[in-house]
Image (tube, rainbow, N blue to C red; front, side, top):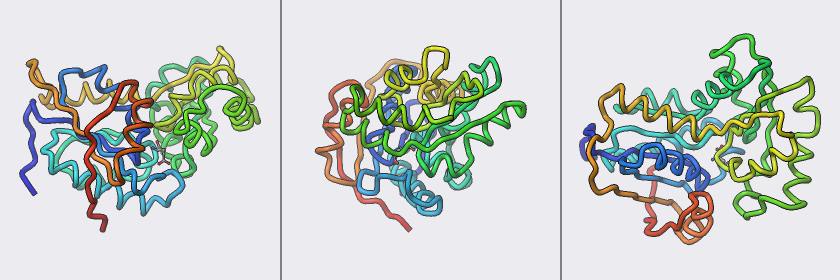
Length: 275
Ligand code: DGL
């Protein structure tokens, strides 16, 4: 393995189970436009949200090791499920700062709620891990936290079924069924895919509920970490965008363009060394 780069001009590494993390990459590109990025989508092993924590941790370490080959200066774990279950293992193993999406999302929700009643939606793995619950209560022990796994939102977002009758029915089933009873005023979109469904989710929960998108909060956290570690790129230069995938790139490029909000090209297929 080549030495790990710590320079200000090194890229930020980002990984996710597949295309979903491109919503986090999009927020990073908006917040830190001078920074180069290397994005890895583990499209051969997606989804992570229904797998055990032990397996997701092994995949996450393999993703991180593949990104270290690119001499990244910081790692962003864009996948909520991986952030929920694998962050301590990644932090222990890597010689660079590691930022997950859970703590920034929880802090943004704690700051947004007025009545202290927060709901979190995510994959079964994220919800079962209790990571959002812990992060919210670590921020403010008085918070009342409600959670629900919403697995069908992931394929809906990937299919592009983000408005109309089908996603509306699914959203009503997941969110109308007691989750918000008792006056929850803040809802955390605790999965990479859910920002695409934000308009329909907002319609179902009503305008009195504030939606919190972890992606934006994470990009802000990355900016702070880079500044604190003196790793922020200071001068304009060529901004490189690399995309790596573990399955053939076609579907990633097609679906990913919708998640990133711009055309995608040049994804390269790699093998991971999962132990
Ligand atoms: N990226 C995952 C997450 O944010 C959603 C897709 C999956 O289950 O792998 O939890």
